[in-house]
Amino acid sequence: MNKRMLSGIKPSGDLNIGGYSGSLSQFVANQHDYDCYFFIPDLHAITVYQDPKELYQRSRDIAALYIAAGVDPKKATIFLQSQVSAHAELGWLLETQAHFGELSRMTQFKDKSEGKDVVSSALFTYPVLMAADILLYQATHVPVGDDQKQHIELTRDLATRFNNKYGNTFVLPEPVIQETGARIMGLDDPSSKMSKSNPNQNSYVSLLDDPAVIRKKFSRAVTDSDMSVRYDWDTKPEVSNLIEIYSIFSGESIASIEKQYEGQGYGAFKKGLAEAVIAKLEPIQKTYHEIVNSEELDRILKDGAERANETAQVTLTAAKRAMGLVTF
Image 1 (tube, helix red, strand yellow):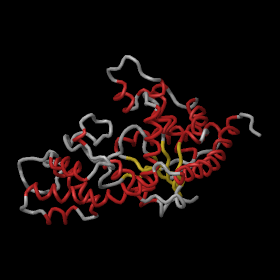
Image 2 (cartoon, rainbow, N blue to C red; image 1 turned 60 degrees about the horizontal axis):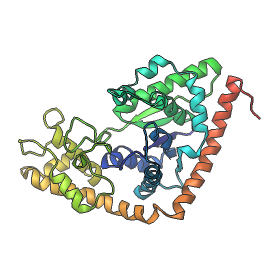
Image 3 (cartoon, rainbow, N blue to C red; image 1 turned 180 degrees about the horizontal axis):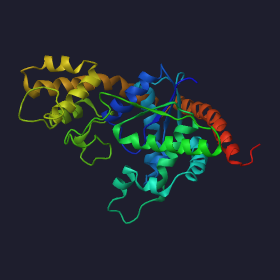
Image 4 (cartoon, rainbow, N blue to C red; image 1 turned 120 degrees about the vertical axis):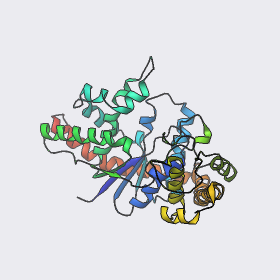
C-alpha cells in the first residue's frame, strides 16, 4: 500500500507560527512523499462553544492558509471534516469499541475539563472521532507532537480491537514525530506550548500579524541574563525556543545561527529573528488575502470533499459490513 498521511488544524483561534512550524510546513514538505489528506477538523472545534460566524470564517481562514503556505490541492486533498459525513458515522461505530476507562484517562480531557461544572460529552468522546478521522482514510502515517502521541495509541488500540473482533478492516497508523520545531513554546513562557487560545497576545505570533506587530512581539520575548545566543534546552529554554523558530523560518541550521550571533547579545538576534519570520510570512499573507473569500477556495473545498468522500465511503462500507450492518 502507498504511504498515506492525514492531518488537520482545528479552526478554533488564530493560527500562529507554532502551527506553521509543527503542521503547515510539514504539510508542504510531506505532500511530495505521501498521498495526503489535509482537512479542517471543524467538528472537533465544536466540542466547546464556537460563535457560528467566527467558526465559518476561521474554517475558511485555515483552508486558505493551507494553500497560501504551499499545499497544492492537485497533490493533496484539502477538505472540511463536516462535509464528509462518514467521519461522524465511523466515529459512532468506533465508540462501540472504546472503553469508558481509556477515554477518562486521556490527558487532554482531564486538562480541559478540570475545574468546570459543565463539560460537553463530545469533549470526552472526541478522541474516538479523531481515531475515525485517521482510520477512515487508511492513513499509514500521522504527524504528531509529543502531546498527541496518546491519541495515536488510542487509534491503534481501537483499530486492533476492531480487526481482532470483526476481521482485518483498518490499517494501523504510525506516528511521524518532527525533531525540530514540533512544539514551539510561548514567547512569554517556554514551559507552555505556543497557543492560539492564550489570552496574552504577546505570547504568540499569528500568521496574519503585520510586520510591525511581529517585530514588537519578538522584541518583548523573554530571554535570560546570560546574553549568549546558545541552544541548550536544559539551561536556556527561552533562547533555545527562539533559535528553533529562527531555524524553521530562515532555513538555517541551529549551529549557523549560534555562530552568526556569537558575542552580539539578544538585541541583534531578536531583530534578525523577526525579519526571518516576516520574510516567510509576507508571501503567505499575500496569497491568503487573495483567496480566502474567493470562488476558487469554494471550488477547491468542494472538490476536496468529493475526493475525500469517495475514499471514506469505501472504508465506512467495509466497517459496516464487518459489523453485520446491512449495506446496499
